[in-house]
Image 1: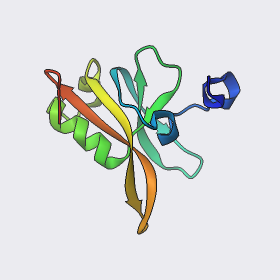
Image 2: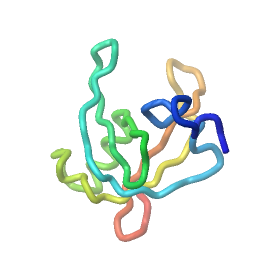
Image 3: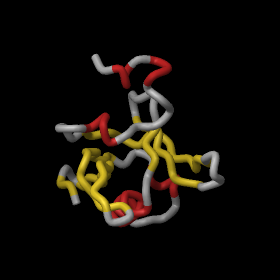
Length: 109
């Protein structure tokens, strides 16, 4: 068991560290807009069978939008996604990030 899996230590949202070395499939159960302390709004997914939510960056949101064929967030419910951790660039430096891809007929895009 990991510390990040225990109650108050887990936090409200998934992080890249939660998916190191593995890729998982989830079904989107609900979609909401989360507002953060700095006033930023981001799309957050409730995933079937999970307590924590998955916050999407623009790239991940557009990956899902492309496969679903709609930017209407209500249309995303029921979509199967795959999540894994990757290395990405942020402000010119490598960082661990989540990659989300929607799955269409079992084939990831």
